Amino acid sequence: MMNKKKTVYILGAGFSIEANAPSQERLVSEIFKIQKSNPDVFKANKFREFQDFLSSTISIPNELQETIPLEDIFTPLDSCIAGNLSYKNLSVSELKQKRQLIFKLIGLTLQYLLKNSDKHYIDTFAKYLVKQSIKRIDNNYKKVDPVSVISANWDILLDNSIYNEIRHCGELGVVDYCCYISSYDKEDKTVKPGLEILGKGGFNVKLLKLHGSLNWLQCPKCHRIYVKFNEKIAMNPYGNITKPTCRHCNYNFGKFESHHLNSNLIMPTFLKDLSNPQYKIIWQNAGIELSEAKKIVFIGYSLPQADFEMRQLLSRMVDKNTEIEVVDYRNDDYPETYDTLLKNFRQFFGREIIGHEKGASTYIYEYIKPSI
Image (cartoon, rainbow, N blue to C red; front, top):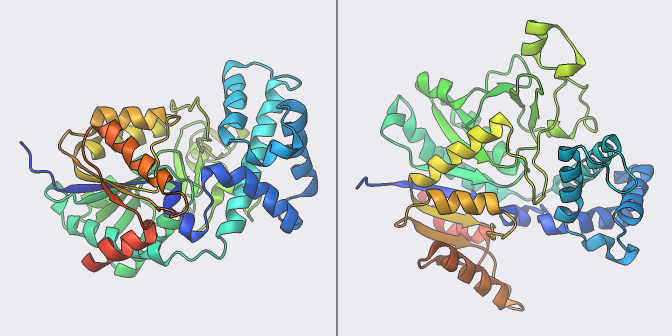
């Protein structure tokens, strides 16, 4: 049997919570909280339109709107859009507009909450990932493949930390999203596909983002993903970015609206559309990473029943001898939540689970930092 040495880290929303990123469950309540405390963050008419959608279309009473799960918003929207069906009082084109409205509110919420985040522990984790991945330099990638990260998050806290650490180390390396990418800025040579850099004797830090990223835009014609670090280009048009088009399609076909770059985030829904060819590549590569893992460390990921695509991938691709560790936070006031989490992991994988109950930052400082 092959002697596996790779560690795969799987990150959920809990990984970024200590850097002030909200969990998926808190996103809607955070929108309402920000509107009450800092109403200038959103345009007033946009927030009122969102409230009216919840009240008039989904029929959610005012007192329950702040707690509605995102899945209950996006599942009917995406289902009707995919089936070309109207929904209550809204046409398909109006549904698409409402979906975009909610996405923009979520994006502004994340921007607001993360603008002054303390991410030192994420920087530490990034430094560790770069130190491990740099062992692949000078064509050693055929022999050494120690670590990778699979993330269910949109936020780019870790992306930026890895990118900045690579620039600091002075070696030829890239953040490798394990799909086909181009640089958003034409002259930016720091954004390259991982395989290209490996072929030049450099190294790649593998970061597979299963649901997309806030620093990605995609061409709807050729499906190339455009990447820019340290900027949330997916939040266009709220950023200072003019609506761009795919420069490759511009060259091949001329400049047309048919290849305006768009956000390609997968939203919280029970009907996730993974037919996008780039996501197929990412998910396929995620399966390969899992199959090669000696150890898998879940950080802030709760293995929810609704995330059945991920559960299916784990069930199918994780070896029976792979070690499983779970990092989360055990609240002394509600210890049963943490205990139930570990029980669910044990039941799913059918083996003993090593638990770490002090949260992401403590785990990184105690178990990751000493090896840097």
